[in-house]
Length: 417
Image: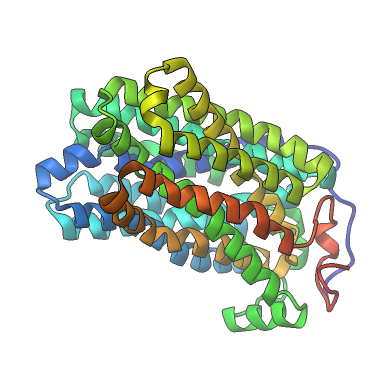
């Protein structure tokens, strides 16, 4: 039996958010940096197109394993300690990537990066959700997830503008300085009080699954995972190939390509910040649906009308901005998943649902590559367009969780109650 629920936090935890934001921003930066350096890496190491596609996806696959492993460990030994480990791990993977000698070493070092990336996401979001007032939980999740476009924008600038000056190996080595965030976590990040009160009953992974089964939450876990597959699939099938589309198929110079990507990330940042407000006022499901429909519409324009859009640069900028704005619904996963599961298995369930969904994206670059080879840009971007439409509809299979009391989730109550 869970301890009695205690009063929810009354104020927004600014310090927890700032430190978790730094961890997540550099987490995502280290994850996507590789895609912006793929052209010089492929040239220097003689990579084939197939090898490039698998190397784009291996860190995403590793993040699924990392999410389960470190999500479970954080439920057992604490959010703070495990966050320190995950930040050090993804920073180590980034540093080692600088010394890659071929496809095999790249594969191993990117896998190491992915393990750390997967663990950090679930820990940071669970900790912030447990430390935030229920009425602000959607905004808290959005504020934390806003580190994603910040990380991508920084990766675009470093990868597309820094690499020609410094070389891709130096960029990876410099980027490993993200390990410094682990020091902030260890010295200044407070542990979740809710976890402190409710962690006495330590569960094995098998027992955690039985706990979810008793609470009739395995179906919810599956639904949350599939929502993540659709939404993260939208993101990764689009953004892992967009830099290459802009430079190769659309013939854009490196500097302009970097600015196009930054434009989309500015839109995503603003979309994330607005998503939290909308989700707290209108509910999680309505927010996910509206954003995903906007994403699908913008991707359609780029996929099927990019020739015309390039002739009107202002319109191209607008469509990219709208695509980024719609992508902001990834800001909702932290709050939505935290509100579905009880504290003693929350991080395990969140890490499993979200990062296994991200792990499936191992196949995203290969899938897009298949359609690009047959139908060009329209075929490649048609994949994320369909996935965005699937996201808009599938979210309605989940219960509305706005303003739930996290301490009261559990027992044998059905999640729709």
